Image 1: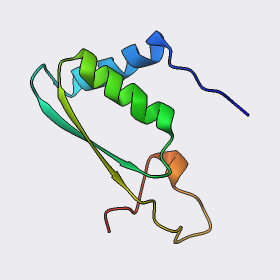
Image 2: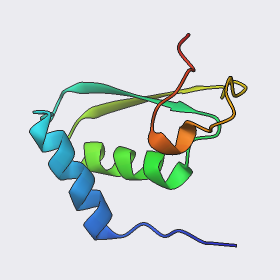
Image 3: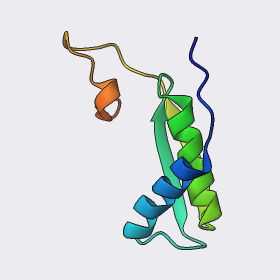
Length: 82
């Protein structure tokens, strides 16, 4: 079983992305994830936003059943908000 670990370089990459989105301290940011989301990615987002001083809220929705033969979760795309 693969054990993924948080590394500072990945938190920094996520911080760079949120810097490009102009997230600053005090901003309210909602993380929308699914029950089947990769938890390491969710945690990296939480850590990066926290490091920027954002107020972070996390909404987790149940992952829907697949509607096609091709999984979409690994692409970052989702049908959860249908």
